[in-house]
Image 1 (cartoon, rainbow over the protein chains, first blue to last red):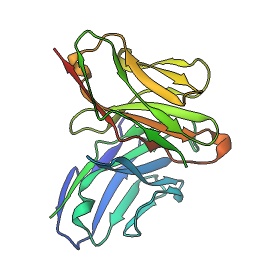
Image 2 (image 1 turned 45 degrees about the vertical axis):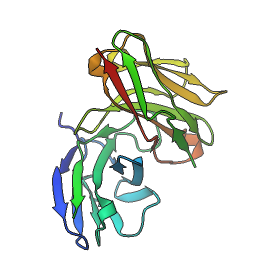
Image 3 (image 1 turned 135 degrees about the horizontal axis):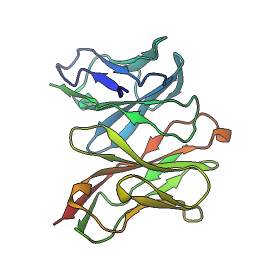
Length: 115
Length: 116
């Protein structure tokens, strides 16, 4: 079965612009989480969605937002881009509706470069 | 809030030798613990998890991890390292369901380099 699909794979944006990233979870998975990966900070949690509702939110500024659609696909948006937003953005989906043990399946990520 | 510490940014080991990648955690209540591996330009791949039961957990590619509640540790181990094990390894934790819907929190990662 298809894995977690993230689009686009690579993106170059200019400071001040906004960007939208997309994530299609594994079929049947209702939970989608987003992470920002940078060399110095590792993986930092952005937000988690379940059944179109944001269940958890990490410690990021309001420029970072997300949503989930009825088909479980998710988007995240970053407005007024800053150089420090350059990172690999990873999406992960899970079958479980709650904090259970099966873990996440990750997509390959979207590499965002802000210039 | 839960947190994960991976005290070593880099671990170097000779091929054929045993390897250990360290992880300690902090969480309210019982932990669910995970190890993931990341190869260059790829997402994270699941290796193994501890939910309950035996403290020694076996996972993919010959890896195992030992849960130690008193030391709040979950170190990743492999008896004989391969060059192909060279990658970035992440430990992650979340609280058990009776502590609420908490996110999965990751450590900063440990880069494992296996030298032939």
